[in-house]
Amino acid sequence: MVVQLARGLTGVTVVATASRPESREWALTLGAHRVVDHRRLRAEVSDVNRVFSPFSEGNVETYAETARLVDAGVLRTTMTRKLTPITPENLRAAHEAVEGSAMIGKIAVAAG
Image (cartoon, rainbow, N blue to C red; front, side):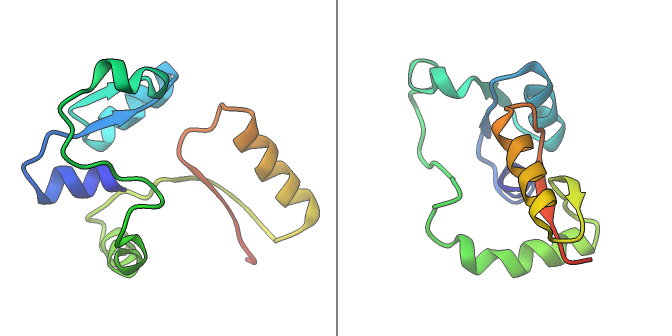
């Protein structure tokens, strides 16, 4: 989501990270100007002014607005898989998908 927000709302050069070709292509389709392997980030990117992560300051405050922009069709959701309902089996499946390092996007486990 940050790639889309930064690209659509600012004039900054957006550098995303991805370790697999499929993830790299996905980040480019979301609007990244450039994609580097996260294991080589320090070696490949040196002129960074701001880093965004799940722990970046202000994230909590932007979630409602981001959801509104997704609902309005301005932003593309990054959820690529949804498991329902919330069960031990679905929680296990979601965890395994993330651990397997083959996920592109985000996975959600929802009540319904």
